Amino acid sequence: MRTEVDLELLGQTVVGLYRLKEGEVMSAVVHVGERLGLFAAVSEHQPVTSVELAAATGLHERWVREWLLAVAAAGLADHDDGRFALTPEVAAVLVDEGHPASMVGVFGPPITHREIDRTIEAFATGIGMTWDEHGSHTCHFQAAMGAAGQEAWLAPVILDAIDGLTDRLRSGITVVDVGCGAGVAAAAVARAFPASTVIGLDPSGHAVAAAAERADGIDNLTISPGSFDTLDEVGPVDLLLTLDVIHDLPRPGDAVRRARAALADDGVWLVADIKARGSLEENRAIPVVSLMYGMSIFYCMSSAMSEPNGAGLGTLGLTVDVFRELTDAAGFGSVATHEFEVDPMNRYFELRP
Image (cartoon, rainbow, N blue to C red; front, side, top):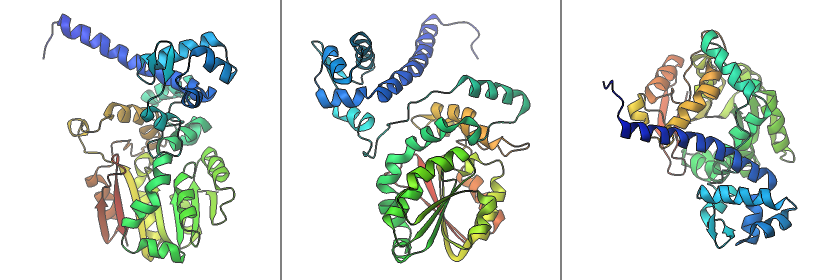
């Protein structure tokens, strides 16, 4: 291990840290642009000057100009002779909410001082925060990270790959999405299969409120407070969905056992979770691995440590081996693993009693 400072590496380290700070600041700049409708306005009027964009949005030109310069410097807009334009790719991601790659809503608002203070306390006490304790902004941010993709491919690609499932859904079965968050997946399934009854459960009041709003007008979708602890109240479940939830749970073993007990004899439990590999070295294959570990500190591991003696799996804690230990202990008879090109971040487990 080196003990002396290498000046060249020191310079690279400083620049690298400022890159991290740059990402923090530019995330807020993107959030401001979304809140003010600036990305959409640039896309509509491009190539556009700051004067033209200010007139189109009713905003102050000097502030609009600095925002345009910032996003252009970050490579989010092209600039030529005072005119700015979004590339088709940036427009797809930051303007088109219906695009499968959409990231609209992902960039804001940032982690609050209250959340940081609570996290600092957790380093001493060991007790983290539930998702509900973060507030409603976290619910919407979490939904934004997966909404476009789930709406585009959950029903036609993922569910269709499970043998016989699409036909059963079309005929009408009971579907429960436990840990439904803002209800994106539950709404997508309900719309795709109107003959089926879909129930979304979440322990967070903020999530239930957001999901209920999304469910408005979808007759076959019901949103209720609940979790794995309340699955027995909805009767035998034909299809149980749990999407990026297990690694957040303080007691994942109990959840897996309750899931098996809730399934109908011919039921299916579809679990999605991050493609965790086990070690840091293996996880470096994930393009945004530092984001995964960072989010775990504030959200996923924090939730998984929100009770005394919580399991604390965290974002990259549910490896195939860990999940197999949980499912074997619960007595599942069949566990199959699937991976899909449309969702490179997650692996899917198909479980049957």
